[in-house]
Image (cartoon, rainbow, N blue to C red; front, top):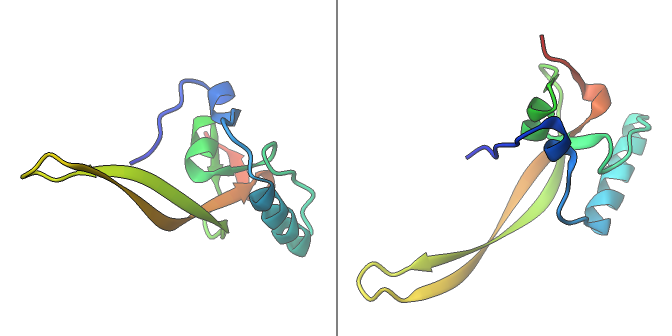
Length: 101
């Protein structure tokens, strides 16, 4: 499900920073010869859309590991238990986007 953002400013805001992800992004950008900076010029597809920009067709994102914590409820007993899932997310730098028309 896509995240809804109220404004482009909200789409640029972060509630948590990851030094490991920032280092991974910087390394990937250096390989591409890009000077974009994590948390300033690198966002997910949904955040770029919320900021009025679109990722150009054919661009490949930088894959980042994501750990999702959740809770599930047993339908019969009503017992709650926590779970953790590992996924990946893709981020794109500003030079991979263009203004939406």
